[in-house]
Image (cartoon, rainbow, N blue to C red; front, side, top):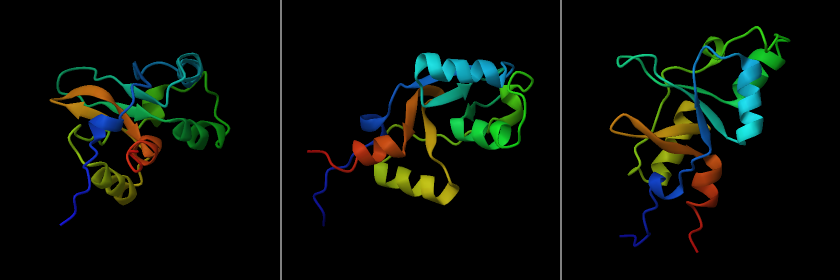
Length: 133
């Protein structure tokens, strides 16, 4: 049996995200990324029965920049991922890494009882979760 210390998502998650409305333009989303220096934009629910979305810079690169679309003419809701896959703050980072690999994820929100606590990505789970000394 291993006596390895369990590192949980809550131990490595970050607060570097911004909550936005899906109706803002991609141009405004880029501005928020730059001004607030965040790693992800979470798209707020529009009503109680809705789900959160996520917009990453890679989405903008693939769906706007690479396709030569005008960022001032596209809205976040057009390219965001929704519903977003989230993780529990008590999840072991090893399982979080497996989830990322299985579903092709790089950054996800951390949810507790339906509320966003933060975000976690490969950077956090590797740099803060693998070597704990």
